[in-house]
Amino acid sequence: MKYDYSSIGFYTFDCLGWPVTEVPKGGGTIFIDELAMAVSGAAGTAAIAAAKMGLSTQAVGGLGTDMMGDWVLGRLRHFGIDTSALPKIAGTRTSSSIVLTRPDGSRPALHMKGATGEFYVDDDLMAQAINARVVHLGGVGLMDKMDKGRNAVLAKTAQATGAITTVDIFAGSKDDLPAVASVLPYTDYFMPSIEEAHALTGRNDLEGTTQFFLDSGVKCCVFTLGPDGAYYHHQDGTKFIIPAFEIDVHCTCGCGDAFDAGFAVALCKGFDPETAVRFAQATSALNATGLGSQAGVESFQKTWEFMNNNPTKASHYTVKAV
Ligand SMILES: Nc1ncnc2c1ncn2[C@@H]1O[C@H](COP(=O)(O)OP(=O)(O)OP(=O)(O)O)[C@@H](O)[C@H]1O
Ligand SMILES: [Mg+2]
Image (cartoon, rainbow, N blue to C red; front, side):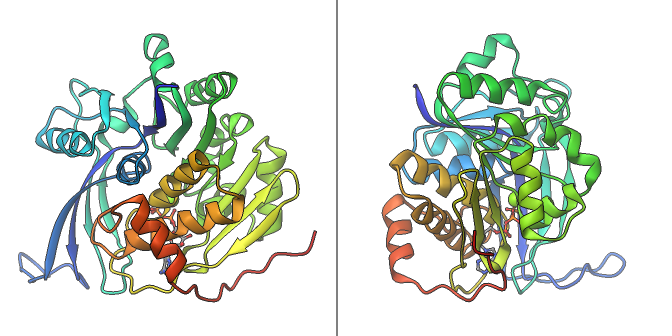
């Protein structure tokens, strides 16, 4: 296969400010300490974090014909990512966010949807898009054209050629379920946040929510639990929680997407499941130490050392014995 990782879907330009506690009244100005730009999105963050940790990576998605698109392209190429399947789509703007990061690291955002809704992997592009050991769909629910059945075709074709498929989503309610549901039978690792998993199913328990997705055809659920860590539950019955690392959070923007990248690295390295989930969370933890997605992620070696030398904190979740 040509690439280790094909990261398909949601690519954004982010402008982030820190610390922000309020939007000034009227036309007022508030002074902040830090401002940063970042390529973000469930596919964009994952692509850069994976490339920084040594995976040969291609970006698949759409950008707009604006300055944000130029910047995103330049940044991806800077990290050696193949952008030949990330076209600028005429008549669109680049998906972009203004992120106002609070002192506690949480990050309300103003988002313009843009080209992510417009890109389409047609038959000519399909073979290239899935030519990777790990094929990642990042941002199912936001890819308007791809979400209408094409993502399912892509994931099915990827699995048929021997790729491992990983799927992360952008979902706020049951209304997003149809777009996600069509992909689930072709998903090896389903990796939403627990909030999104609950929103899609309308359930609020870990076991029942997981069972819903396993019954829908997913081989393995890997739910991120924010500061409570991550939950792994495979069809074969293997299930466990790994707590999150004890860190001083700067900005949690892209933590879930960085997790996806760390997990892809672990798959390519052949790590056992527990090490994979621990390594993915080390990637997230480093991500949270910087302002802007993947700013804190440097290399495989740094993430590996972080994983082995830092304490975790207690999780509020527990797993019932099998
Ligand atoms: N406050 C925190 N302290 C420590 N670790 C954290 C914290 N928040 C997130 N993490 C780490 O990041 C991982 C992913 O976080 P989270 O569940 O918030 O993802 P997400 O909501 O999908 O984020 P994204 O917006 O990037 O999609 C967690 O499994 C955890 O390891
Ligand atoms: Mg997420």
